Image: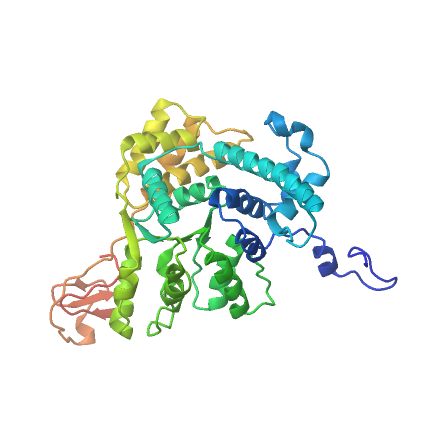
Length: 433
């Protein structure tokens, strides 16, 4: 086999030859076929965990070289372990071989599976920390219900209250059983299926067509082992110039995924319901089929308790003090538009101010300065359009009007040499009286 890092003498180097040496992860559609031979779901979970881990930067090798705290496996981190883990995820034992090979293969499988199960348990424990808010608890409960009952669940709430953060955190600590996807804002199917393929670990080459990627995605999801979490679910409806098109993305999700008993969770905002009503009005599409497949709707609160806000403030700004955390939580509590995003913006601004003074850590003084400057979305208030009073248009001779005259009562406003005629009820954005 030729070396991908070399070329014939005299030929220019090609970057795709270097890129071909990058390691890719285990393909989920192939691993799904391996899992189909295992009846016990608890035995399939470590295999799905390894498949998810193989798509992390560097693949399995960097994670396997870490110091494993489980005593039973400290001496088993040998060179053959990574190969055995790949075989565990892909290789099924053929029935036609003799008993001696069968016993040897089963012993190797048992050893490798125990290692994967122990490592998955450790991974979940390490990712179970962090701040737990009321939003996080409700999101986790809804996702657990969707995965255990293999049903469609909607997690509905107003923007900027931590839905996305909670969903990502749940998928990380699920140990490979839940995959997070942010639905892209586009109308083409290729972008949509490629986003799902990347989250699942399916080949999503730019040379593949949408139908080819969709077939691989369906093969993985229809196995029912993975929970598909779709954030920004409003983009499942047609956008930008295709308002009269049927919601093909949502129809595919219902017919090719939900109907096969695969667990799905949609994270929605009021925009989702607005788009749903618009599609029904413009296209005649009825949502009975969609609503009838919803197994549960989790309604999230629109306001976070102040205790949760303080806990989040402590987590994102640990270098602060009690008064700083309370002030930061108070800013988020007063502004219902930005909420947690406003807190994060203030902390980023404070750390940037500290960096301008060559300091590694921000101080409460930096945060107070960020609040005082009002440069974050917390202090943002949209400007109101200026309104002018109207009456009927009164035509007057040009010579009778002075350049400095401003007669709003007569319906004619003269600014310099320019006339502006208004009618009753008119609004001119940006015009200051």
